[in-house]
Image 1 (cartoon, helix red, strand yellow):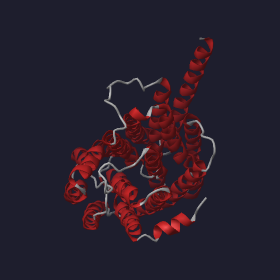
Image 2: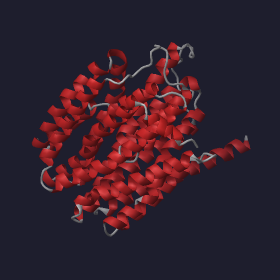
Image 3: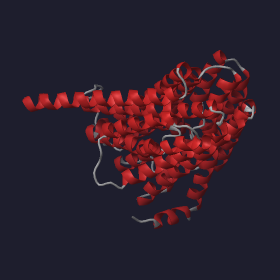
Image 4: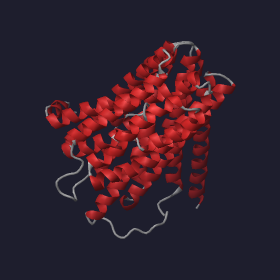
Length: 436
């Protein structure tokens, strides 16, 4: 392992500046999830099911908007593409804390649709500024920086919300994000190489996907949404380079094995988003809202370590087995008695988070021919997003009916059940193939 690459990369001023700007720009929205959840529960008097539904609506908005925003960056340039986000971030997040829950839902959807595409822009630009082995190192640095952000943001959001300042906090999120967008427009990092046909090859696309999923669990919404524009960009570059023949629009690549991977992606999204809501509910109910950041610190740090360890392995591990482990290890979080036990119990499922998503994307790349891989990755991102949209309201519903511990139990048991069904189907299929 060549750790000198990190030093060499950080010595390049544009790369260093981009990583710093990206890290600062992500902080406001990293606090938005906790702020919005606690605002709905504490200020609007709604339950956690309602808060989870709002998170799901925002996630759907991000998923719908991410490919469109990515295409706008490609077609009109970064500065023009960011104008709608710079305007909408301040307007929408300044209005959201002043409206009823019924009005809040469409507003957060629009907010997700027009959110500042900082995650995809930073990674797209890093793909231009860094080449060869440096590119993989750059993506790894960005993933680490992102995890640091999500160790800080939720803690700040929890403190602001529990001090009765959720209205101010949500407004600051919008204004600060708009300011970050303006700074990004001024900086205007490159988003494409000098050659119009230059771009990410298949190996580099996999590095980019690995960087997206390595930043989970804290911002799995963005991670899911960004797979779609990455896949679309890869398809377009392959077309320009003449590597693809005329596409036949069918689903011949959609085999039972691929469907199983998509199910794993959906299950991972469900467990992660449900765990997110469960952490907030457990600490808020116990009167320890200000300590939410401690749990996120342990959870995200474990994900980083797990991703680094899995990436160093010589053999892949079945994604369904990794999801089974993560789901089963999420269940004990229901028995936490305080902040520190919850933090410690989050370590084991956190260790398997990045490996689950990395193994799943690796499996898609293995199962689907390169000529259809972009389309497959798009569906993979949709599966992950669908799971995210399901997990938050599912956990919230059980939390409202039974209690905070039920949030972890519901998504953990659901994840285990999904994996057991998947393993059973795999066994049946193997027996049928053996008898043929």
